[in-house]
Image 1 (cartoon, rainbow, N blue to C red):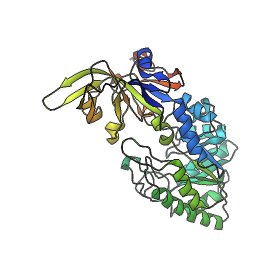
Image 2 (cartoon, one colour):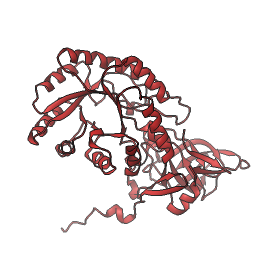
Image 3 (cartoon, rainbow, N blue to C red):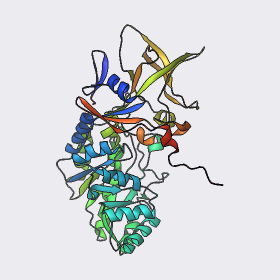
Length: 417
């Protein structure tokens, strides 16, 4: 569910008109609903009330510090994959002991920063990474809390670009080799084994892949117990999908019921890393129609948002529902392509989409854009990145200003030679 709805034919976010935001902030802009973020977090978090757990929001999904602050105040931790994401999470007020660090390419600088902050644990992705983290912890006179990210070779039944738990993927350590990696970790002086980690993919719409992965982890945990390793944290990752179109993903309570039935009261603190299921439907991309162009084969709505603002349609062929900010049933509908100003044929937000007949200057809302929207945006074609807005009730604030042309070159220099 979300808090974007029509009132007298005009689209609102909570109690704020999107036309009002467009007139005062400009377009394109991302708009997030405080009420939706709060509701989604509480539903997911509450589904696991029966067991000790930490919900570590996946910062890669939406890294705006205003959004992170809202979730942190609700009790969320953070799942990070870079030093920059750690910096954002800490600036947003999320305690370090609720932060887990994943990712296959942690640098020495990033490792040292995370050790200095005192994060909850590192999710180890390779043998060499484990060696480096042990060395850095020793150099800093501390111990690094670690879990090994296990690749269970489970087909998540999602887009291949966002599948992470199969043998052919770059993530984690093969489940059949993980026991030996834990044995090596036992011999290292400057790491402390605290958990087991697994993440199989994103935008999953079925429960069996989650259950299959958990069953494989349970076998590993039993073997760890046999060699004297008792874990405290079981990190089951994220990946629960949302409805973009006609998908029917499980409700978080169904997800929780399936996992807890399989676990049957095991004595671990569970860690989850949801991103999309919290933020996806809590945000939209607001855009304005610049021109309408007709060819013998197509009708195009050329808008001021582009693939640099929202790359998911171009990158994944992803579907986002798009609707007019003002509806008028008397206009009828037509089939259009909604495209941006970028000099690429792949610059589209929708193709062959049935939409109310629109005019230049009117606004469209690209729905379900609160996750993997702004975080994946770029300055391609030297386009300033969009503003971000957070709405709460009848108030809104710009939580990231629109970039200017000056911002585009602020860090650049013409060489003296």
